[in-house]
Image 1: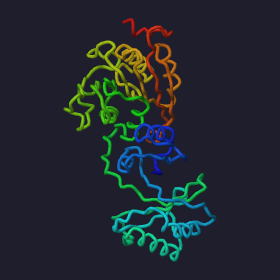
Image 2: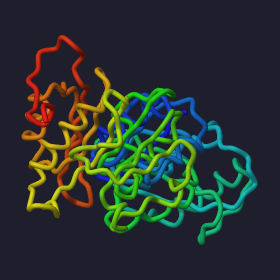
Image 3: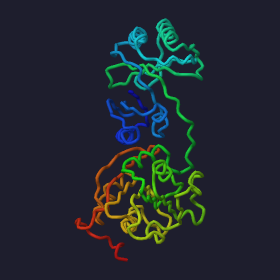
Image 4: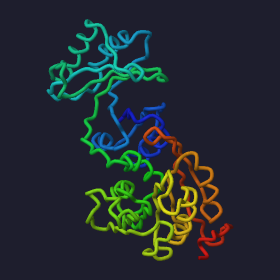
Length: 345
């Protein structure tokens, strides 16, 4: 099955990697806000991914023409040979020209309606509420796609200031997952990263945030009381409740602005938290950290200084702000690395 997935601009590399992890998707086309893959996953699983805004099963394609109407006429002639499901449901037609909704002349549209009605057994309705068939062009694609839109489940809005579920899921997918993983977010806040991670098998997930002590941070309702999820109000710079070498994966989004204690800067907070993360993470354990892009190079240098080995880096936008996901692992014994002063305290 060939599927076209639309996503927020600036996430293409992360989305492509996540589609490979989640639905074994092989990328055949990508641009700044869309990825086309081949996959054997059920269409509902692809459409249910939080980082996919709209998702379309590609029924067929024709060469791109000078005018969209010419390509639509080509589609009409091909529909009898394509595999439209005979659902008998009502449907509507939509046209997207390089990312913008478009129209076609009435006569061409009527011919497409007749072809789809004969193939699907359904009846055209302009108001929607049934199936949707889309004719789609993309600026860098030499073909015009005729697709069926996959219905998406309704999504809850993230809490104010919380990490959006699509970004959280993309960050989680930057590291490998294992059913025996003990996972930690030392700056958990609402717990969005942990909520995304526990959709995959895990052993234990730890949400830690100083805000739990004074109520300034609240876990998502789906996490509170969830079996296998532990809530701590530890300072990320110390993590006193977690023993050494107890964690397999750290997924975290440290503060981007000024820290609210002792006028510490984000750079200082991250440097001190890295010391505690290094202590609780097992050798070879994985770390994925979402940071402001202006701090990314400095954070990577902090990683190297205390024994973390950067492996991959992804640039993205978070609410319009440039950000970077740094992904790496803690070096195993024998790897050359300098220790942080925090480790010796």
